[in-house]
Length: 624
Image 1 (cartoon, rainbow, N blue to C red):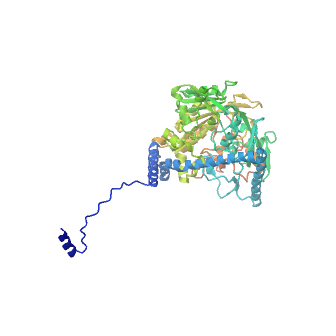
Image 2: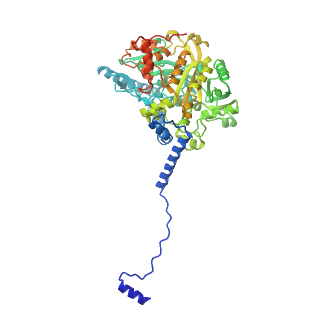
Image 3: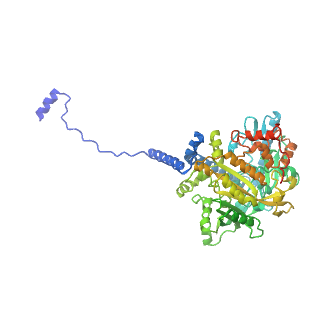
């Protein structure tokens, strides 16, 4: 063999007689940590997209492809973009709140109120200076706040703050100026939110007389718009808690307004949407509270039973009368009434264990918890006050289930629920004009405020118009002040509840709210959104009620003025020189161009008016 190897090597110099090398041992391949994370995220992204799209009823081919694509992708966009951004935004507000508290405590020696008032004077001077510069420039454009439309709680995302407007920065007006625990008042600037007020007041066993649920709503928004709470059957709209307004007009003059000093302007402020001037601060009533709420759940199984029981509860007096009353309807007949009373802190170990912290992120959404009492029957439980005040924040009432169908699943609540809910403003920010218009026709956000004796009929009407469940019912006391009733001027024949301490008659109304996707859209059937909303508006006007102005309105300007009494607001705007400086209320609340096509309706009004354009109703609407 050696000789043969030598011969081969002579003939083939490259011949190698050494044995071949041993093959390397087999090496197992492991993905890197980055690859694992990337693949996991991709799997979760695909899973949430497919799962959200399959669980939700996506809009049909009659809607634009952009809207259908956005609907298919909304679950991952919300989970991985909007909700984290909302969480960071909330942490920023919390940091600002706590940093101010620490500054007041450690730097100013506890003189927080004096420091806040001094800062307020500087903030007011900034607004006044902007208005003076606008006047010196020849008043270019109507005045609006610089706050973007998408940041508000209305359904609109733009269209009313275009190039023909002049924007004034007022977002720095965000301080609580004074809490008077003895006289039960709080004075604050308009950009203070309901969440910030709850943070400051609840530890003192205090609350706003009318504390609106959603934490990001500003007190200035409800003061110049409308606010309602489930204790409104006792106190009325938010406007009934107002004691004083500080306002700057278009000339830069600051007015301090009370019911005694200027009743016409004072009662023109609610529902005016900031069309008389810019709100600088306001003073409102507080109520004493207790740290907990005792809630009683009462199921009802017919519209007539619900209406009768709600009427009975809202008209009760004395200690037995509930502090809060609302109802949630899960079908046209099945509802759960929630009555609540302030409650002292539990003292026994057993009672403490029984407390239900309904807003803990791992808990089921509150409205789903309420639904269980349809089967369980009437029952009571104790809930912390702050949890009760913001019981619908986590689920945006029940809208979050339409956006993320599995958001109430225990797995989602435990893994993702701690981030909270998406902010309404950020939800709107991610809409473009095409998606916004399609959403207005595929999704309902509507409220109708009607006398309580029409509630059973109203529930049936909402079922016909929208078929959206749950439905929310808030009772609200409405006061007739005659010539100074403002934009909400009730029909005297519906004011059957008695008289208040000032001798004014009042009556009980209910706010019916529908939020969600209409049943016909879910079934893929034709749905005439414009007709449904206009039918609701006509029915509401005919029954001496009002529609919520933050919702999409499909009424003409004349119809809007027929519904809302403009006597005081028109006089106040003329007196303050606001007519050519600020848009009027309808211009502030109507949908953006292209949302509601009212060409035929405006033509009919012009024809009825003799071809000279729609007549403007400048006096209170006619009563039957």
